[in-house]
Amino acid sequence: MTEEEIKKLIVDYVIREYLDDDTTEVKPDTKLISSGIVDSFSMVSLKTFLEKKFAVKIPDDKATPQAFDSVNNIISLLREFGINPT
Amino acid sequence: MAYKDKARSFYAQQLKGIRDAGLYKEERFIESPQAANILVEFPEGAPVKEVINFCANNYLGLSSHPEVVAAAHKALDERGYGLSSVRFICGTQDLHHQLELKMSEFLKMEGTCLFPSCMEANAGLFETVLDKDDAMISDRLVHASIVDGMRLCKAQLFNYKHANMAHLEEKLQESQNCRFRMIITDGVFSMDGDIAPLDKICDLADKYDAMVMVDDSHATGFIGKTGRGTHEYCGVMDRVDIITTTFGKALGGAAGGCVSGPKEIAEMCRQRARPYLFSNTMPPSVVAGSIKVLELISRSTDRRDKLESNTKYWREGLTKAGIDIKAGDSPIVPVMLYNAKLAQDVARDLYQEGIYVIGFFFPVVPQGQARIRTQISSAHEKEHLDRALAAFKKIGAKYGILGLKKDEIIAKYGM
Image (cartoon, rainbow over all chains, first blue to last red; front, side, top):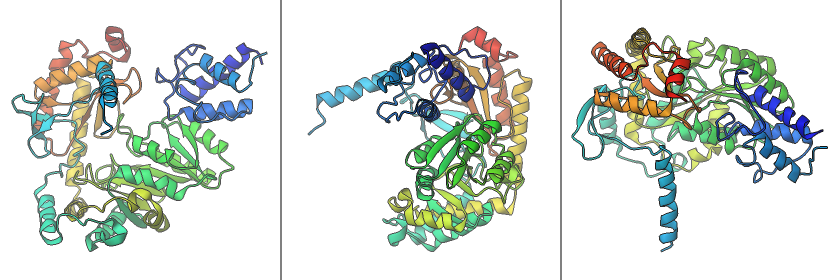
């Protein structure tokens, strides 16, 4: 997948999983956790989604609110696990 | 002594951060029993002021009821101050057993296990009855104590958008391979005051073979025709598997909580729930007071009926005044202000008018949803409600928010 495809995949998931309406715009640099779109308790769904989609296991000490705070941060995190956009 | 300058300055810095973010919680000293009218010293050292309380969980006005106080006094005299033991060593009096039986009867459940608080009931329940092969499927707005309880449990965690049944069904489908599944929700959500759609939740639970667990702390004693709680209100008294609730709100307001449900679940809590096994037993006076409360509310529904009519009067009064509230049926009535500073300013001005309310804002409620949570009690008389309505109108006019809807308030004050 290209970086753009990965970003779109995650943005689409965030909108579907966390937002009740489609009026909030989510961009790759939109703050997810610190803005309250995703609370730290609900973050588990996003982590599970990424693990399944990219067949990786993200240890709890890496799945921090900072690492999940934007789609761009998540892309960086995925790189640590060898998921590199084509 | 390890608490040297390094640690002191670290914590001082943390506290400064909390203050700078406007998140520091100031405690106000109340110099009277809990009631509709209370005497408050705030800030510390200020002259004591009499105000009408709109932020207690004293829904049925039983926190200082003379019969409850007398029952507690009697137990204090006859059974002592404390038991200096956990339940299973030498901390179970016949009174504890009686309260458990009465609570099971009141909630129409097979068995009950008392805990020192509902926080501890929620902290202990999940890890006691669920394991790594199981699933917890929780509403996203459940109380913090449930979140903590789920964190202590090895079962897989799924959560669904608040009260969104289509999303819940997706999660039930995703978790099909788990051994036991438990849908977990508050009965009345404490910040919004809305009631979980338990009828629909129970339908989904039947369809997907899941258990239903409800924290009814903001419901037991007054929601439903005879005050049994949200399972009565939603017509599913025989379909909710487990209820956790508290004696610290409507039921006298002192302390204690419980897990009520199938007898095996109550028994498992006695055997395995760590907060039950390793914390002290409820004091006899509180147990006796709670038994008296259950007697009072089983004898008559007058108090919950008055609470219902007070709630209706309050909701209609605020709406007529042009105040933006969250719709619903419960006595938790959030006045929506959206902006954190506005919520704090309005609460401060209302206090000057003799109305005790508190502003809530992020992270206690979602970003941009700051509010003042008002809570109605059957201890409120019409005069209390009228005085508070007049104060809300006066302060609402001062800030120019009367008649404004969400978008207009946000346009004026920001989020």
